[in-house]
Image (cartoon, rainbow over all chains, first blue to last red; front, side, top):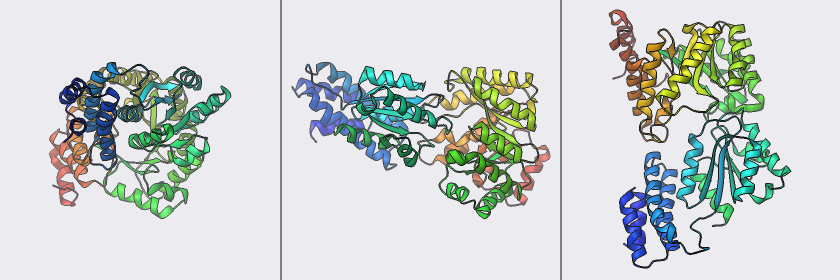
Length: 211
Length: 265
């Protein structure tokens, strides 16, 4: 097994300390930090995402894998060369105005981080203006809007309209999700895509940034 | 144990087309099956229909009440839909739900009074979902105090401490059990209900976790749950737990359930 495979395996099986140690070994051997991330840590999380989707891995296992990946990141990230990015892209995410339900959103944020994205989690109950400001400030490739209540789904549309008015609608790809949200609804309100779960959102985000 | 049958919900795959097409037979069968299995309320929820929801909820209430004697639990985040459902309902309905969020409380309270309905009170307020036992007890207490001060009887309040998945927080099961016990002790006579199956979200063999949790929660004061009454095992556990907790004089209910072949080992 190559060192990369070994670190990916340790991410998959959620061995937090081992991932940190293996990352350090690779650094000491002179492997490029960006390669450790891509070939080792993110490669492991890709398998986790696929297994989660296939019901072969479950939420707590994904959590501990993500934690392991972060243990590796903590070692590697400070060593990245100037201008060299560890991130697959930036995603801004939050629940829309009036909606306080954040379990789904948190899972999606975690899966995206696992896939190597820089995630700016704005939290819950965010007004359209707050989303607009965050898009201007963080300049993300992807914006994720979450709603669990049927009554807050219209706030997704309001948010998209506000982004349009502010002239930043075309700077980001917008994906929407949450238990009552459907593909049809996403199309109706002019979102770019609908993600049914954390794994789907990761695939979409990858598509968006062309990674 | 007061069982609120959860199966008529358009977020379930087979139910959405049945409601859209106004399939009377499908809905009435699903209602009757739940009543026969021992449901005390039949929940009706068509929230996924959004624009059509108020009209569809009214149709559900009328369609289900034609064939069952138990009251309905009218379930929607949309006040307009709740109002339509309540207006159509005969007898004392259960409204799902009110919260301590300012707007929501003010919108729902007048409906409860006008239609003399009972209510599920979700332990969340404008600050969001509860994190721990203290949050749950604080918000539930405020809701119970406000509702009773506004003329709703304690016996008509079903506090829902909000079940969150054990899969994302290993302490969640304990937080909720502690909250249930504290609320049940502080407000004797109030009902405590919950969306039971949320506890097992994201985990394999979910039924086993749901079954274990209903027993644990009942031992701390849970006396109702929004759940699947066609799950024989969980219904049997609820009946047995009631007997073991002293809620079944002479074990009469347990024996009756056994004789009518309703218990599964």
